Amino acid sequence: MVATPKLSPLLVIVGETAAGKTALSIALAQRLGGEIICADSWTARRQADIGTAKPSREEQAAVPHHLLDVVEPDEDFTAAVFKRLANEAIKDISNRGKLSIMVGGTGLYVDGVLYDYGFLSAGDRGAREQLNQLSNQELLKRIDQLGLELGDVDIRNKRRLIRLIETNGAVPTRQAMRQSTLIIGLKYDRSELEERVTLRVDGMLEAGLKDEVRGLAERYGWDCEALKGVGYAQWKGYFEGTETAAEARQKIIKQTLDLAKRQRTWFKRNKSIQWFNTPVNETEIVDTVTTFLAN
RNA sequence: GCAGGGUUACUCAAGCGGUCAACGAGGGCAGACUGUAAAUCUGCUGGCUUAGCCUUCGAAGGUUCGAAUCCUUCACCCUGCA
Image 1 (cartoon, chains in turn yellow, cyan):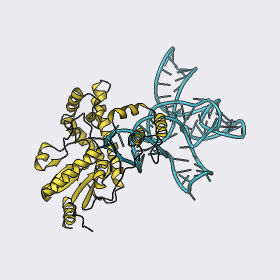
Image 2 (spheres, chains in turn yellow, green):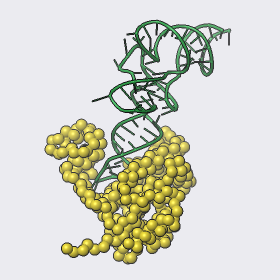
Image 3 (tube, rainbow, N blue to C red):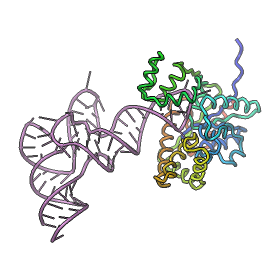
């Protein structure tokens, strides 16, 4: 039996939005000679900078970042593509003798890499739009006609029904968690997180979020992918004249907190994550990482 | 002062004698998640020893087999006439 080549070490930093992942990742990368891979479905998009809390120019200059700005505002980007690019980046980084630090709050993207998800066929965009016109009832009928097994699929969730048809009932795969991987999770106290999110949103407003949104809407239209995210979609009413900027702000804060909840729920089930309460004790984390790298 | 309208769970708001622990919305809590994932979807939301029991619909009485729903008085709010 041939010994499997030693997997390059991977440090992963996860946690809810606004938990301080970016700051920590840069500090660690500088101390440990690392490069950052952004496991984030929104910072992957060009021109959406302020609302996605994308690492600043200074931060990007301080430490090499990967998978930032890889698609246009109106282009599709998916977990499967992310997984491929992220694995390439990890390989590239370790070839250069650096430490890969994957940072992000998009649970599916992170897990795709950690568990080597076997993503299924992509599904044609046009066909998908057609299926989307159908009601769940009609989709179920179609599924029945195709002789597909429903299995555990939630029949009230249209997207899942459409995926079932697109993948022709194939079952996706998942492997044991990647070896040589240390996962650090950052967690805030609820009320503190709420304060942080409010401050962050206000910071985005000062930084010109409204103009960023206007620009994207003018260039790509409200249907483009970049304008579907939190911080962007909530402006639609404002630009249509039905809502005030204050209402948009409130909605953004609320949706951000809702997002944080879903992120927490996602990461909660991964028992390998080592949680740290924030604000973090950096020395403590550096010790943890150093111990991990020594083994 | 007289005549009307109102007071429902965290908030807004339905109900108009039994099928009401009470529609719906918001908010809150919890969960699912494999090529849209910042998406999409689900459950719970008076209390408890939770297939059952107990306490709720401004307050106190009353009518009734039975009341959030009807009657009386009181408190507070709104409107019309004075």
